Length: 266
Image: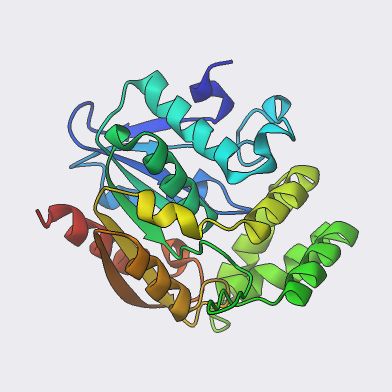
């Protein structure tokens, strides 16, 4: 099957010129970028897609073995770019898609000109000399809760991930997005996400990168953003005033401003 069909790819903006690919995080879909992309369509060719299992992707193409690691999702990205004939793209990855972008850029660096990593985490588990933000007991409890009651887990976790308790409509939107995701696929994707360790992949990235770190992010704390910045050979770190883990929804203007400033700085 065509990768464009499989991943529900949409292309907006200019027919030619620089390309920006936006990739969503766990439990989300391309709709989560709707408040950011209008800032790009006049100047860039914008590519949006859904990971298999999310949004309008073709669920029949899901293969547990292929998606047993983030490498399978990175292969999807590379197949989309190849099918569209794209090179030198800017890849904007939110949350788990940040590491998917790292893997894709490390595999085929000529496909990419820059990476923008929004709330990235190469390892969620705490380790010796490394703070990912979660103990193994935390992750086990999270995954057990997800397995036993996915909808209940979504209703509890989504507002915590979103942050911004003074704007409950944001948490409701993320909860609804989680609930639209295929539960069986979401369970495996959660395991792959929270148990991955991509720290060794960061030094393999050769393109300039921007790390966008949110304030008070319970999923990817400041120490993680600092770690990613230190271990990428050519990176900038911007700490947003935005709080929570989803600045593409809670602070789209600030998010777009930071990305555009990075792209326009030659």
